[in-house]
Length: 72
Length: 291
Ligand code: SF4
Image (cartoon, rainbow over all chains, first blue to last red; front, side, top):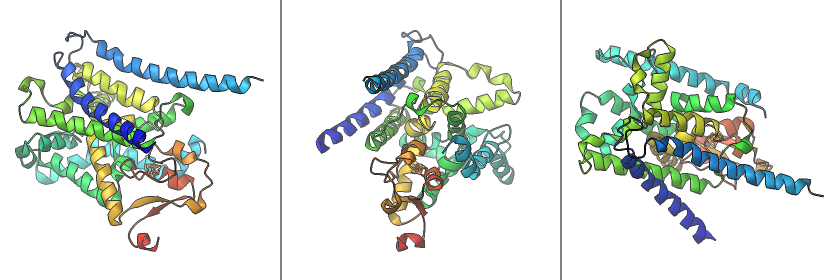
């Protein structure tokens, strides 16, 4: 169990550490001016969509629990 | 405890955040203005004058000449914050920082129930992500600084910067609309993550501070070292704990572990837990030896 927890923490660390240079390079061509890069501004949508998915998953868990409670 | 009660119990912290706004954000920037006046600097002070990231970027990018050059005040401020964290905990983050203060205030002012807000309960995971992002920041600073990446890439500091977003919002609010060209994609994404995702939709409203502020992350390490040496720290007393876990919901930095102990690299010494629960106590100096 401890090994799994450690692996999870290292995985999160590596993911975060690589996310910064990657997002920096992805945003390179636009240089801060939106729609200037090959992604055509889709990074604009990526973050809100990710968060909406996470919130959706959380909401789903919550409603499942609620349904379980209501069930006779 | 409802939010009005929290507000009253922690009134000095919220007053301090308001003071932080006037001390560092233009058109006021009273602290920076006073220092500039003393040293005879004629530049117009803004929040950028005490940039939280550039001195860190310079160090890891090998641009030491910037630290000792005309931007010495910026560097002195950042190192001052880090060094003070050894003795006082990350008190700048928890009591004065206008960037964290605004996002936390917005999160408290908008009554979205906690169940609709994101929160990582596993502090180890939060710490991993926080320091992963710090290492990412350092990697880019080194790549750009040592010219392994081309000059056109520019610094990592200004592309995604919540301080610049706050400064430009404040300038617009106080009548300076000249910075309208600032609102490019990086600025809007920073605004989105700082206030909407990190502020409104993350429990505590400190998403930006937790994951994207290198100064906050380094101050957390300094606080951990200081606490080990016996300086300022918040301590959990299991004998007074009822196990209600309310402290975990109150802590804006997600610093309280499942066993109720405090993760020091995340804690900003805001004292929300201390004012809400008898099981948390602030210890410093001689009292630590008594503990
Ligand atoms: S552990 Fe307590 S003092 Fe530290 S950040 Fe959380 S609420 Fe504030």
